[in-house]
Image (cartoon, rainbow, N blue to C red; front, side):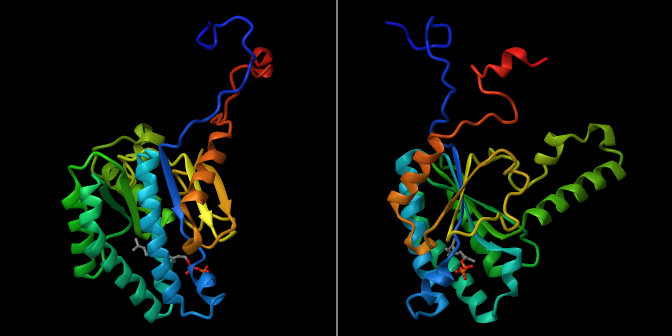
Amino acid sequence: MGDGGILELGAPALAPRSSAPRHVALIMDGNGRWAAARGLPRFEGHRRGVDALRKTVRAAIEFGIDYLTVYSFSVENWSRPPEEVQSLLALLHRFIRNDLAELQANNVRVKVIGEREGLAPEISALLLEAEQTTEANTGLTLVVAFNYGARQEITAAARALAEEVAAGRLRPQDIDTEAIARRLDTADIPDPDLIIRTSGEQRLSNFMLWQAAYAELLFVPVHWPDFSRADFEAAIDDYAQRDRRFGGLAPGDCRAKTAS
Ligand code: FPP
């Protein structure tokens, strides 16, 4: 019996299917609408959003995902009413205080992306503590995007490159996509394979714009607090059905033979 490899004679020319995603990124949207639909304050939606996050992290570990990125607070979120900003900061604080021990016990490495400058010292210290406590872990990497904006991240990379050129350490002709990628917050993280946004909204909202170049996008019509393990599993199954060609052609595509 053959091994099903591409050299096996008579094997059907099936396009290869993507398998499990290595890196899943989540835009956890819909907390406010979830709360409004129940006559609850927005804070309650965010609080239940943390419960959903906790369950999703556990599922990601179980599914063997290497990287899980969560959009927890964008640079634009500072424009929300001060009490909502305070509640989101308090939830981040509580999440790290209450869940760090479980993350550590589960071999999860926490990494934070986003602008650190200008944050309140207690928030910076908390983020650093989460990273330092878990830095030697080798399981799931939980990437927390906090005070994150993709345009800001790309702008900072451009500025760093310009400074290196001005200082004579880099030649403009050496700036390529790799040089830019290495100066992003995600320098040591592979690009997301799958980006899931809950709540039915279909946009990226300044999230991982560079890294999303070839990501598969999935928009799920449930509000984030209702996002379940089954929804996550269905998203991964959906991903597994997709053909990723990265701008090329799938092996076995008849156009591959005629393309010059
Ligand atoms: C979007 O819902 C969600 C956010 C702005 C924050 C997401 C934060 C959490 C799930 C909890 C905090 C995270 C950590 C890491 C502890 P929305 O408020 O925009 O919902 P809406 O569009 O329905 O109003």
